[in-house]
Length: 357
Ligand code: ATP
Ligand code: MG
Image (tube, rainbow, N blue to C red; front, side):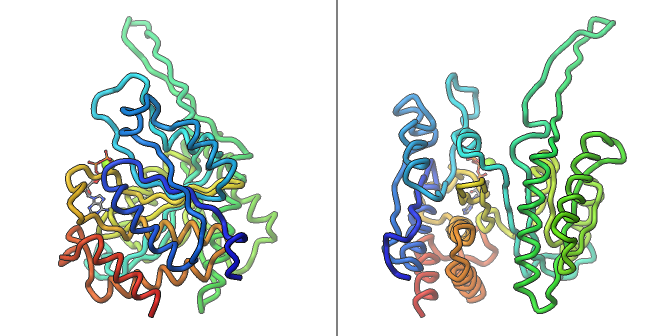
């Protein structure tokens, strides 16, 4: 249907730095694949904090909650020194909107394995985003010798482990269905040989989710210790498909995986909750290149694609992926990509043209 009223409303939050270049690029793509899609411009970030005293104005949260089904977030500058009253708006948004899953796909036909062969990779890291060590329950005590000793609490719940595995399994099933092989691989990452209670619960819950789904034959499930998972990611990136992990392991694995992509400017992500999804390029505000018109818009454009896929617009998402792929294959790229000499605008216009062709 082309009726505007049925389209989801999307909040656009450029944030700081190159967010103001890549989010307008993504806007053009959204307007091209879904003409008339309602878009709302919203404020957040360090500049907003300096202007208003709040990094995430309550009005932004309210509009997202009341009017939007999804959002696209650019980037925020994190101040080098601790600034009183400032806390990252992205962390707050994840809490406010219960965005419990961070989904980060990494696709690169040119990725190398450890033998120097160009094997390519097409994988996705699904990271639990609400608990684990990030519950931030730390305490400092003094030991018997009068020296400091610090402790942190790690929380792993059945509920959070279940919903993150359900998200990952859904993704694995979609990937299986989209392939000629009809199969996919779901890797459950843990360290239950050492942390048998917490990681044991994560692993057992993941297994139970798979069983409760009827052990679908299209998806092969395996588990892997986090240390050997990092090794495997670089040793044989082509052997990795869908990875599900608790928060801390997922954080590290997602950055490791991003290193396989060729440039930070190419890697998208989605923060997914029960009733909201927020696309977010993995890169930061890149103050070193901000305002120069050379920021790579691909991460933001792909994040817009992920946003649409999660909102049920799979065809549009696929069209975006194909158009980006086509433009990259033709060598139209910003300077962060080896050999690239195009501007943000050149790349965006080429993607728009590819979508319209
Ligand atoms: P922040 O504190 O906001 O994370 P940063 O200085 O860490 O800022 P990042 O955005 O994380 O900067 O980027 C790290 C490096 O990668 C920088 O040199 C930056 O220019 C480059 N980079 C990041 N994103 C892009 C992009 N979209 N296009 C081109 N280069 C990028
Ligand atoms: Mg950074």
